[in-house]
Image (tube, rainbow, N blue to C red):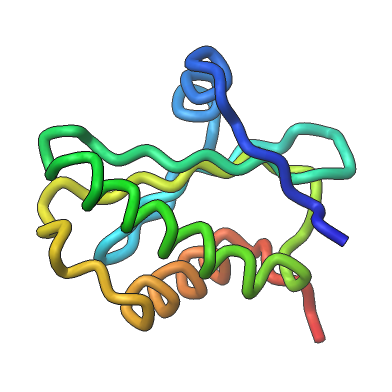
Length: 115
């Protein structure tokens, strides 16, 4: 069963970015904030300065698919915002690199369930 919904409103993103805890990887940074619900809320933000909509949407699909693969191993009750780092070229978005980065970030944030 899907335990994640998407953040869509600007104020939802701002709330997580202002009050959440920051973790940084090579390609992606995440902000995590506890939401006291039994569901995760996911947001993905990529600057329009990094490329046109086609490339940005491609990166969003890669991040969303990687998250979907490990979703059952992540604790519930959090708002999570992924941000693609501006220092990294958007053309370097590779499924395997992003997967390793996301797993490292969730381990740093202690959101992986044991077992």
